[in-house]
Image (cartoon, rainbow, N blue to C red):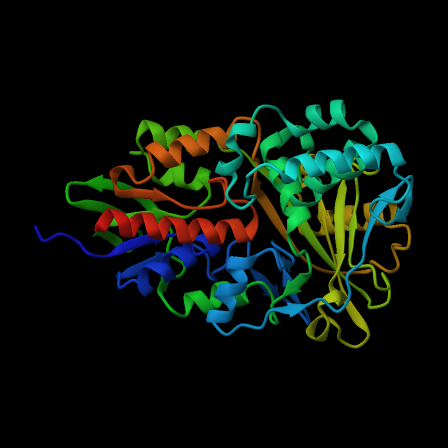
Amino acid sequence: MKEPKKIAVVGAGIAGLTCAYKLQKAGVNVIVYEKESAVGGRMSTRKTGSFPMDIGANHLANVYTHMQALAKELELSWRPMEFLNYRILKHGKLTRLLDDISSWSKFKMGVQSFLSARKNTDYFDLSTAAKYDTDDAAQFFRARIGQEMLDYVIDPFVSVYQFHRADEISLGAVHAMLRLQRQGDWTLRHFPGGMIALPQALADKVEVKLNTSVQNIEPKEGGVTITTKHGSETFAAVVAAATADVTAAIYPAATRGQKEVLKGTAYSATIGVGFVVPKDTLGEISIVWVPYVENEKIAGCTNEAMKGGELITDGKTLLFTWFHEDFARSIIDQSDEEIFALAKKELPKACPFLSAEILAAPYDLQRWPTAMPKYNHGHLERVKNFLSRHQGENNVFFCGDYLNSPWIEGALRCGERVAQAVLARRQ
């Protein structure tokens, strides 16, 4: 039988599309399978009315250096926000992030930030921080810096950007984040048209089969067979760029090492909810953090007017909010109407300038039962071991943010690394 030459990529999120694009640029024939009707995954945008709403990742930053370079290559605009001001809810009032924190807590935090910055880690490749995967962040920072800094800096940062609590993130991941905070440019950016602009630009360069759910990945002699509702096809290799739970379900023939990393991956959940509000509702406040100790339901919100232009129409804009994991899981099966009502009830408690009257116009919502991988204690070392010993077994390569590659920048870089690994195997 003639050896198959094509590579299949399962999943058209930013990791899978980046991998496919890099492989195709190297001369490889690639097909991407996507079960949804649009590309992007958690880097997607939906327009149900006047506004494009980023239903997953909400904003970019200049620390996303690989994404910035890829956007330039694809001739996409990398635009700054119109304004950028963070606030945090503390004792029922919105303050700047470090206001009303004791000087002693700030000093101890500064020392720890300095020590973390000296560790040779890369937040977008957390395998570099695996040797610091010795504890969870909550225990460490409670002991070293105190409860105040844990409650109003570390824990809200984790819950705003990961949706879960600080006791479920590895100390190694937080060391890497503190290093990035000190050394990176955190100026926020966005794509005109929404987050989907980059995935769509990549999809335009490769062959993507939408509305095509992969039912089975089966290694066979001479290749790997993929089965969909349309039939089966054999490829030289397959890149599984779906979430870990989906990959486990469609790839029952995974090796022991592959199964270990899939089974060991946990995800947080959230629900993103958008309301149409008067554009001056939040003034020039861009992003609000809501610590769990202040509100156990609302994790944060953004003022989409910070993106300007298409996010302001007839004096209106979008307010986007998302929930802490426990609350999201408790209501995720309720109807859209019930979820909108709960958000409308809870938001004024988290943002005192909001009211039921202001929130009278629900816009859209997105449920995320697997919103973000939890880089919990033990995960960093487990993934590092998988990547060094088991990646590519059966000619099946895993790809995605759960492989020690946080956020959409990490997922993109993971796609680049996996493309390199596939190419190296073919040489």
